Image (cartoon, rainbow, N blue to C red):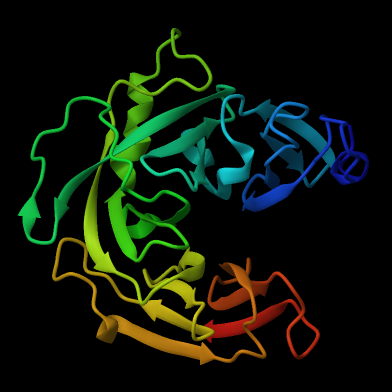
Length: 285
C-alpha cells in the first residue's frame, strides 16, 4: 500500500491511520514512524505504521493490542543501522512502563520502571524484577545519545526522571522466543529522579548539546534546561528562557531540530500562531 493511499484517514478502515498522535523519522534509512491511537480501541486497535520515504510505501504495521489508545502520546526512534538495531520507544499517559517496538524482530514489549532514588535518598539499590512504580511518568520521552541518557516526564507532572539509554538498549538480551507482543520483560529499568520542571509542559526534546527543551505552558515560554545527571536536583535557575510569547507559542505539542546540522530548534503548535504559522524557531545552538 503506498503512502498516499495509506495515510489518508478513512474511518473504520483499520489499515489506514485513524488518529496520528506522534511521528518520528529514522533519518539514515528514510523511514517514517507514525503512532496511531486507533479508533474506539475495539473497532481499530492502536498501532505503529512504518513508511519508506524513498518508495512512498507502507512497509510495516503492528497493532498495539491491549494498550489504551487514548493514553498514547509520544514516539521516539532510536536507530543504529550500523549495528543493525532499531528500537522505537512509545510514551503513555499511564505511568510505570515504556513500550518498546523492535521493527527488525516485529515484536513489541513493555519495560517496567522503578525509582532508584528520590531527593537524596536511595530507594532501591538493587533491582532484579519488573516491579512497577506507577508514579514514574513515561508520557514524554527524550534521548540524548552522546551521554546515553533517557529523559522522562509527563505533560502534567512536574517531576523529571532520567535513565541509562545503554541499559534500556541492553534489555534486548532478555528477549526470548517465548516473549509475545505486549509482554512485560522479566527485568525492568531503573530511573533516577532529577528534580522538577517549572510546571505543566508542552513539547519535550533533548538537543545535540544535551539541553532539554520544553515549553512551560502556563506562561507560554520556551526554555532550555541543563542537567547534570546524578547531581544537585534541577532548580528554576537551571533554565534558560529561549522565547516567551502567547502569540507565537499558543499550543506547542512538539519540539525538534532541522535535519541538516541539528542546530536550529523549532516548536510546532497545534494551531496557527499570530503569524498564521504552526512552526516557530526558538533557538540556534
